[in-house]
Amino acid sequence: MMNEMNYNLIGVPDKSYSEKYIHRYIDGVMEWDIYDQAKHDRVNILIEGDAGSGKTISVQSYASARGMRYFNVSNNNSTEPSELFGQWIPTADGKYRWQDGAVTQLVRNGGVLLLNEIRFLPERVSTVLFSLLDYRREIQLMGNGGEVVKAHPDLLIVADMNYVNYRGSRELNPAFNDRFGIKLEFPYDKAIEKRLIKYDSLLTLADQLRTQYDKEEISNPISTRGLVDFVNNATRFGLDFAISSFVNGFSKEERGGVRLACETHKENIANDMGISITFNSDSFRAERI
Image (cartoon, rainbow, N blue to C red):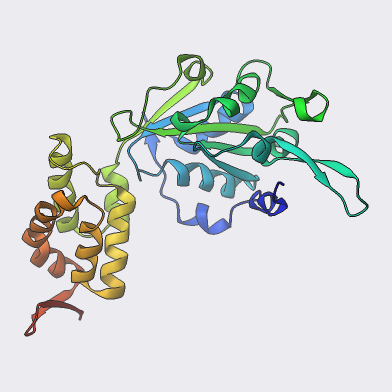
């Protein structure tokens, strides 16, 4: 049976998302301006980029700023069409009524629909979306007597995906790819990172590890999100904890090399963050000044 609590996930994101967001400019055009025009012209957007580069938060913050309802379809093999499009549910009087799924609600009423990690979208879901993503802009609810739901004029559809060289990724179906009239690339943006992360030494460490990633010496990308987490952990629990948490994100075979890189930059990071590194009988300990 469908869990009706899922529908509570559809709502306008909190204003804090848009108030704190740092904009990305693509060939001189701010991405929210692109989203506005795409919504007006009923054009779908596909965003490809690095993990943790801000693809999801860009779309969520846009919905927050425009006061639009938002739903993120997290794609995996367990995703069932009934969760997204709807099904019949029992009522208190022993009868049944049709309950729209989250996607159908947005199609009917407008909002921002994000198809997250679209490379992993199950075929049983993508086949329902084909007609929504092309010139028809509609879905057909076979479970509800074949009802055809035309897309609301204020519906924006965005899909995102990591680069295909990421572990587990595969090429996007050409027929699906062709349904997105605007294609954007979201690599790690140094201008954004410098505003989010005030410590040059940490960005230098990130550059070193990204070079190692490009050379396939490590398997995990160094995301903007991960760098923000590093700073937060160092502030909350100390620099040693932040380094250990960061290193634990890599395979056991890679952790030694990543920790060595972190230790090489540790003193500079401590100085930049205003953290003193003191020595006790067991290990180095970072303390907030």
